[in-house]
Length: 282
Figure 1: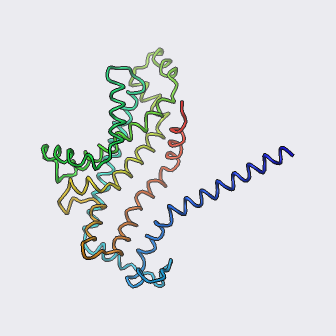
Figure 2: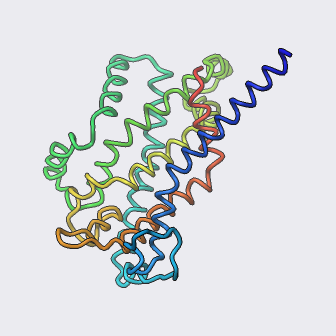
Figure 3: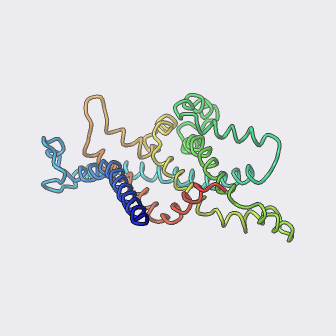
């Protein structure tokens, strides 16, 4: 009887978990699905009452209008370049910084960790004015370099703080044994520790890419040339005080999500392993 009761409780818990997951998936996924489907609706169907989920006649007119000029392609390539560079810098600098904070003892280490945490907690809008003044002084406004630096101020503290638990869970005895055998600190890092946390580094890089890809505020301020705008900033061109091109916005919004979906699909295994490993306290 007791075994039957425990089995029933586990089954009920599994059912409740499944229901919650389905609800969460529907809550998050339905707006994205609605956006994608709406991008294929002709203009007369976008605001019909009551609304229909599927279009009565599928149309590509919004995509044709969006790609009538090469502006959208430039926006897309600009975002791809900036987000990719930010991701690579975050993976490189974030990994080395997190490793040094965990494995080495030096003066100011704790202050540096608190500074990184404080930087991570500061809302990006609070950095807007000082960051713009710094970029203007350095002559980096209106360039992608300025945007990359701006994105790094947001993503790098997050990446370092996310990577610290991955290195903390590695036993120090492995490093000590390698050092006794004659390995250098760099060899210990590159040949032993880094391969063990590569899934965490990749998952951190994915998060940095997504944060940079979706960023709007700093990109809109640090770049004012039309040819250098990112995709998120370029979408705002279709919003004015008198008119909003909802169809084109839906089409561009759908296009914006495609690289993220493809990135997740390509490295899904590493992302899941990294997030799972980072959640375990060593």
